[in-house]
Length: 413
Image (tube, rainbow, N blue to C red; front, side, top):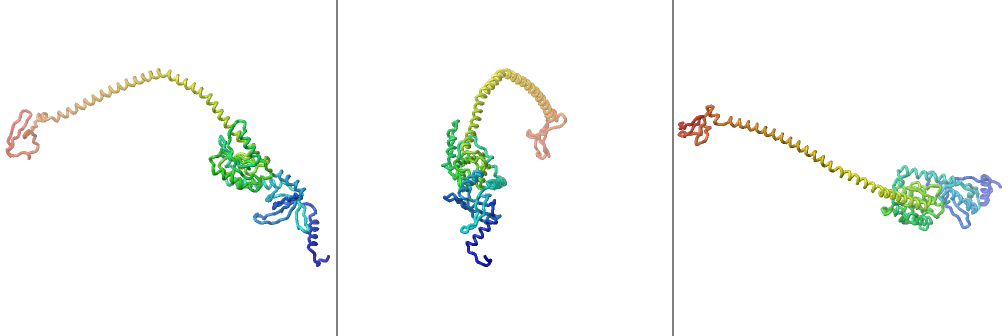
């Protein structure tokens, strides 16, 4: 065929098919993200493989893919068993494909094998990123640091109401061998599929509205496929659980790997039944502690009463001697006080007597008789001493008293 001869579309497509077969004769391992995964009634799985740009906002590449029914029946359970992850859109996979081109349907990749370890690595990477973010935000261990009440009996349960695990959990609590009473209350939630995150967060919000009614929260999942755990590996659910003010116990039925909420929860157990056993054992330890305290009381109280009775009897025996000793001490003290009072009184009386003598001497020294004996005289008018000559008038009669006798005079001027 000459180069300038036109080709029909079918001829062009056939040429492309032969060229691809020549260029890619063997199967290749390809890394991609699953998109638009659909399985039809015949068991064939039709999907798209996509690759996003560095920002993750737009597609950098896309290819149509197919997994034939026989291969899909083998690969899907194998992948989900190994990864614990459903074979759904949005996950990253490493698949072995053959490159094909059909004249009618165009370019496609036919999956012949899958490596679950690649997906496990990507899932682990995403978990690590979420946990590192929670750590940087300072909330990673907040729920673990809460103290589970000694009697955790009021249990808020997040589970599917139809899940066998929920029934097993309630039965295990109800029929415990110790006869403990628990009060579980169901907060229904979707526990598998793409609605897990929003549904469980909504249940936590409803519990938070009546927070004081509950001692702990139990998130359990049972009866579903172990591949539907991706909803428990999200940042939003993890941050809600990490910051929830009640201890959270998880038992979502996945024994091999912990989900992100397992890592941030107060306590992680494997199954719903194990969650119930944990609560029963916690209550049993509390009961044993109380029993030990009770026995201690029964043993220690009689001993304490006996010791206190002996102490009382000992004090009663010592009271007479103590009283006698106290009376003697008080008598001695009284005698000493009486002597001190007598001595003090004598000293005071002597001091007062001396003071009186001094005053007596002063009074005697100031006596008029003494002054008169010294040659002084006293002039009286109408019986009163005259101290100012201006108080007298000519013709006044005055009396002058001497040490011996007195005489009267008439004032002339």
